[in-house]
Length: 82
Image (cartoon, rainbow, N blue to C red; front, side, top):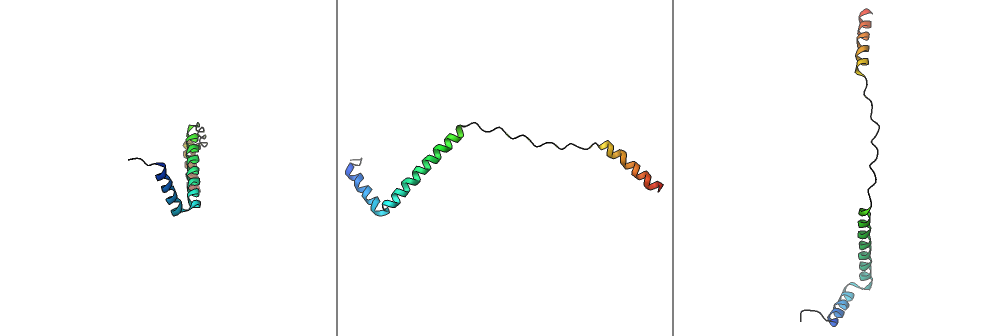
């Protein structure tokens, strides 16, 4: 009492086969196998060392503000002269 005997398991298996059919149970087992393989592959991928990070893009150099300031007064002087 408390545990199932072999006869009980056979009856449960027969009932499951009658309800779902052999093809559906077989497909379900195939899906379970694919899930286990996917899980193992995911664990194996985690063990590998990650790829080094990509190099950052080249920095854009800032313009020299003194050259811009030097050119501006010259333009203003030309407008006043002209």
